[in-house]
Length: 196
Image 1 (cartoon, rainbow, N blue to C red):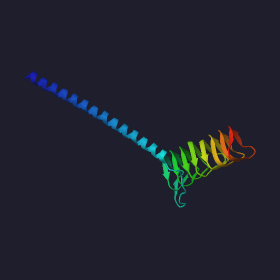
Image 2 (image 1 turned 90 degrees about the vertical axis):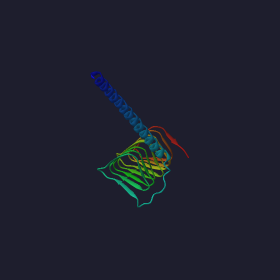
Image 3 (image 1 turned 180 degrees about the vertical axis):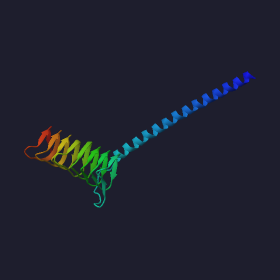
Image 4 (image 1 turned 120 degrees about the vertical axis):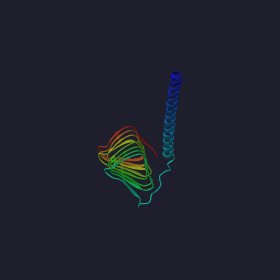
């Protein structure tokens, strides 16, 4: 009988090893499924960003506020206007105006933008006017119709209408515009291309 008992123990041991191996396989398969879902979610998010329609006028009564004590991590899409006193780490798409006194780190697309804060973006696309306050910084390329710059832009400026630089403006990048005025003291470290 001792040999029968040993055989049962060996069988039980092999069954446990088989169960453990099956559990490991299931865990690996679950991890692969989770990774695949995360990849799909990232692709869907990128498609949403790429498919974002050009900005249109927004109803004046719609105003979203990111307050001073608030930090948003992720993209923001709004049909209205947006006041950002806090911090946004993600892309911001508004059909209306954006006023920034806080910080944005991400792509920006809106009707008008007035910044008395910090913006770091690969690209800022504004349908109408960019206003950058004195002592404030935009890091990234700016595309707009008109711009009034009193702060610092580290990136290229593409202004289809009028570009106005105050004496405190500092531009480190190329400028492409059809009309430009600059006060004495404005600094431009880049090329200027005037187009009609």
